[in-house]
Length: 134
Image (cartoon, rainbow, N blue to C red; front, side, top):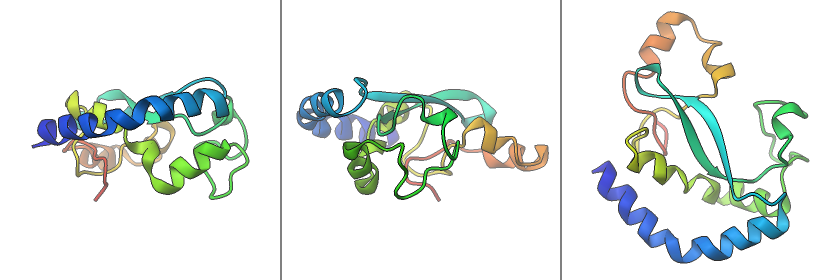
């Protein structure tokens, strides 16, 4: 189900990808995707795909791993993409690669994952992380 869903999603989104990629190149800092290491199934690390919505240096600026609603680090297009959740669409690639599922707990950043006790960490990813969250 996940592979079929992600394949159809990628194919349906392709016509919108080129204009969006051009818009991101022109309105942001010249990059289209943001890749970040996350924890996945059986605590394995993987790189999550998202459309770039923030300044490149944003992880070392401001609030760190927390993004506020009107965060100054968001690009104008990035603010719209986050508000509409379109920035999450590239995670269909993660689903296609088998790193994520359509439904499951949202994958955590390393810094947030390590805040949990080892017992909770062990329980947290007994299933694949999901695009939609549970």
